[in-house]
Amino acid sequence: MASNITYQIGSLAGKPISSDSTSAYSAAGKSPAANLRCKVIKSEFTSAEELSAPTSPFRSPGGKMKLKGNGVPVYVMMPLDSVTARNTVNRKRTTEVTLMALKSAGVEGVMMDVWWGLVEREAPGEYNWGGYTELMEMAKKHGLKKEETSLCSIPVPKWVGEEFEKDPDLAYSDQWGRRNYEYISLGCDTLPVLKGQTPIQCYADFMRAFRDNFKHLLGDTIVEIQVGMGPAGELRYPSYPEQNGTWKFPGIGAFQCYDKYMLSSLEAAAESQGKHEWGSTGPTDAGEYNNWPEDTIFFRKEGGGWDNHGERILISAMSIFVDTGVKLSVKVAGIHWHYGTRSHAPELTAGYYNTRFRDGYFPIAQMLACHAAIFNFTCIEMRDHEQPQDALCAPEKLVKQVALATQKAEVPLAGENALPRYDESAHEQIIKALQLNNVDGNSDGTEMCAFTYLRMNKQLLQADNWKKFMVFVKKIKEGKGAHKCLDQVEREAEHFVYVTQPLVQEAAVLMH
Image (cartoon, rainbow, N blue to C red; front, side, top):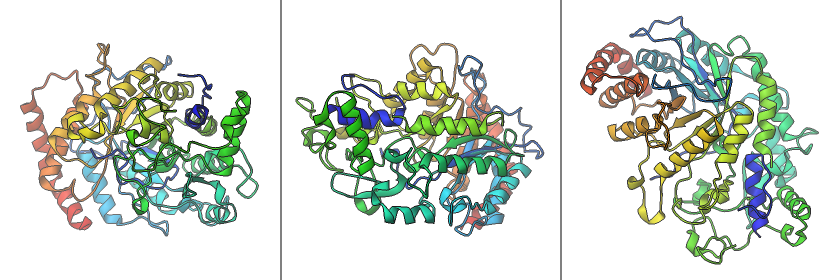
């Protein structure tokens, strides 16, 4: 049975593992995956403050992060519905004013979701970039960098949905036969199940079409592309779906390895280890979505019994975007609940083979380092004591573990907040995490390479929240090497609050 877990988890990290290897939750509000996320900049627009030269995420030739006390660039996620189902810009004037306000606030750029289900909706190879083209030009006009990604409730393309209807096993399935249609099962990554093409080929075609359509903006306006790897754009299995109340925080989730393609992969892996009996099915004693580890035989403290998906997509992405000047990044979920248990059950069901005795994030960091990609991690705004203690939540410890893994692998680390927060307490926690102050051995002043704030909305534009946000952005941009006192930073921010007030007020009215 241990081999079942070993294979499922190894599939995400891109490194097969042999059978003898030894708050609110971070995904709140997330739903089906899209495919690309991009960061945007151009210096034609003069902000309220003369901004320094762009400091987008980058690697040295040796692969190490080079941001040392000089501040961290801040990006802001655009609303999930920035592009409508008809492929037009939603609330165009609101978006225009919002971009101007963000630029004036000192924000480096914006992050936008680009949906496979919108762009290639009707038939394979038929792309409609419509509203995305207009949004890219708007960002360029206002001097904002852009980053592409995938989150939100946009379904897969219509023609892919039709293939799901013909063969339901293209979707992930749990042991009770409940299927999840937000992402194609990685069990058929290399099989020609989509009108004669493999899913990996379809993803590559989509990325190639994006590159060809926006090649004049790559490396200048579009500076980073985050490649969607799974549900909510994250490199994981859909083990904790909120739809219809299937899963609720802080349940352990459920393994998603019961479609015929995943079971076939499992059988092959078991055979390769000479353990035929391990290949018949996935775990049957791992509980249900809302159990806790101690409720199950599989995850109990005592006596309790997870290949290449991420790497395949990254190899395709690297070949497509080589020499374009953009960076690639991959998002990993911050699954912090039950982190304090021996089993780390929610991480295991999501595909992260992380336990008390094994670091599950270092192999992912190594894989990203091999392909010069950025490791993007979430939940950096959370404190341990803010989360349910009976669920042994530990977001701070998890962030520290990931930071240590990325330092060891010499791969850049970027951060996001998992939930919308407007309070100074969360802001201070984010700054602490970005500066890597709690990471052992970080004595050279290294910081994370970028931060993305979730998200632009009407709450952020409220007067008090906007003021706090501007102070927050200024502190991040100053960096840990700055010697300004807090009062001085706040006085400077007050000036920019006054300058941006007309834009913010207009945007707030338009959003309502």
